[in-house]
Length: 113
Image (cartoon, rainbow, N blue to C red; front, top):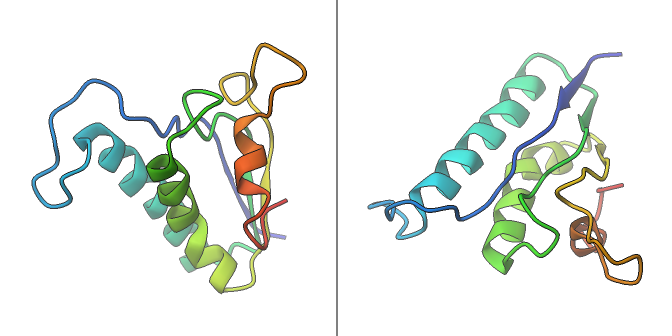
């Protein structure tokens, strides 16, 4: 079985200028483009699953834009019927056990596990 093993995307709007094409934080767009390339390249090489081993985001409370870009990055895999498995990283987890973690926001996306 071929799969993509990736981690530490840290999608976040860290200090940066704005991207002239999108109007979004340039560093966030850089992270997104690299993540999307990883998924698309893996699919082109015949990957049958995508395993993201943690730290999809840089914090446990990603913005709606960060969540949307994550979904768009893994979108080609989901559209192709390739499963995407997400593990919780230390940056994705809150300090309080009663607080939701970042990956809870992604559970509603069909195909993500």
